[in-house]
Image 1 (spheres, rainbow, N blue to C red):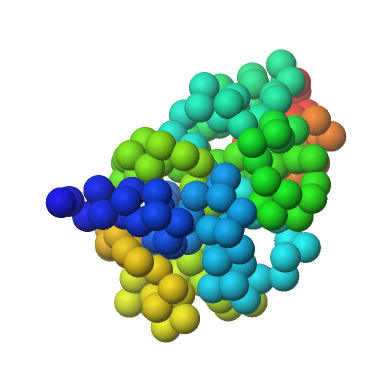
Image 2: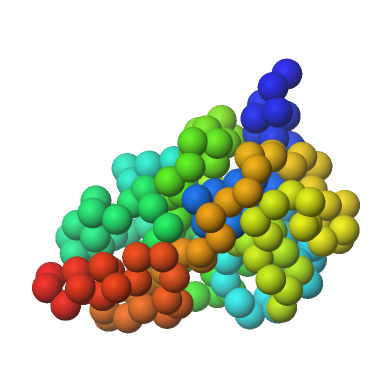
Length: 194
């Protein structure tokens, strides 16, 4: 069994997986399984009032889990896959545990072959949050994983060093950038013009 198949099987079993993206290493679990999402919060020591985004393999796949406006759809067509997290209205399948009870969820489509392959094979949205203990720096190499994260993850997919710039988090509906990261200036320009 390949590493990616092992990782997908771990996700299906409700376990956690560390996976590379075009930004930093992420901590993945089945984003639709409240218990698996809870394990992500526990591993990170993350406050449960802070929502976690979900990763999917394509823009059409995202529409199974969010209700996107025309403007959000145009934005996603322009910037995804890429180092961008887009906040959209969630559908019923997305659990409160993931969104901290909010009606919007962050959508991420990583521009990274291994991350996309894992999303495809797992056949469910993954949690899209950095593979670090809350308050600690993001991880660009598996060697830098916190022991608590390493212990919590059933599989860690290694793809060397990642670029390291975090994704830009944007609410297209209100034209608000919540976190400036990769491509922030370009995104701001798009929001101004559309």
